[in-house]
Length: 32
Image (tube, rainbow, N blue to C red; front, side, top):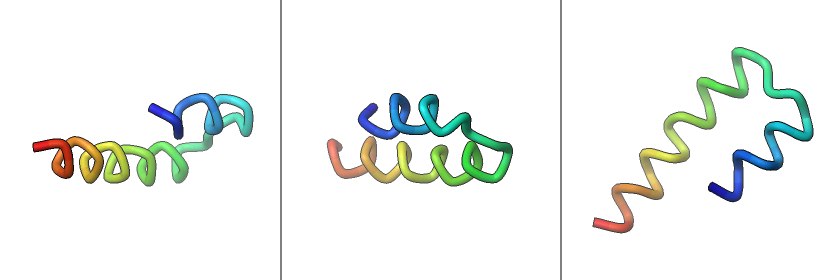
């Protein structure tokens, strides 16, 4: 969730959104 506030501040574009999705998946996978 640390990436969400940063992306919002940088006004995330479509490309950044696509990158943020895999990043979140990696964090969720690491939790399991």
